Image 1 (cartoon, rainbow, N blue to C red):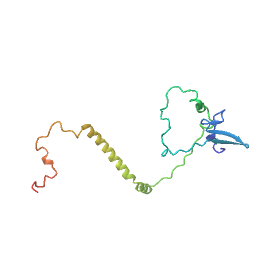
Image 2 (tube, one colour):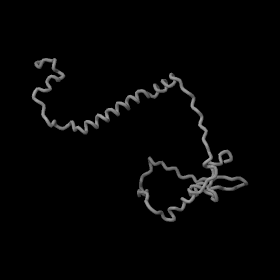
Image 3 (cartoon, helix red, strand yellow):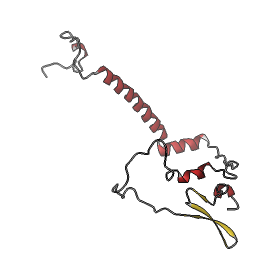
Image 4 (tube, one colour):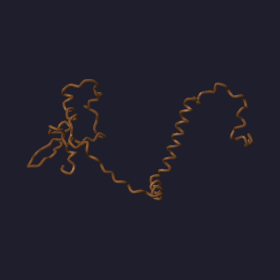
Length: 157
């Protein structure tokens, strides 16, 4: 607590924080922060039975609903003054970057994303054009015979 007092600050005039979840305790000549530990729930196995599925209400809250909100407005000494000092990451050379890209396949991922974006645009255009429907103007008989793929192969084979 002495090294980072801003982390354990409590609102002025109060002895708890977060609706009483963290309580300041004086014991044996020392100051301690006692926290209530919530029961850990595995949501992948927990069923929804008994859970309230109601949406959060809008508008004015009752006194009981607003009970813990007064703590949020109180000033906490030292909270605004704390600063985080970031350490610079070491610079990587071209070989290291290429090695990392090869390990994770980054170049391929970028290409796949570009192709997928192009295909999405194409799908939108096809959807707008409704290409699966019949043409409004039917082609003249024999109009597309020049473009057949098997045009070089005789028909009797």
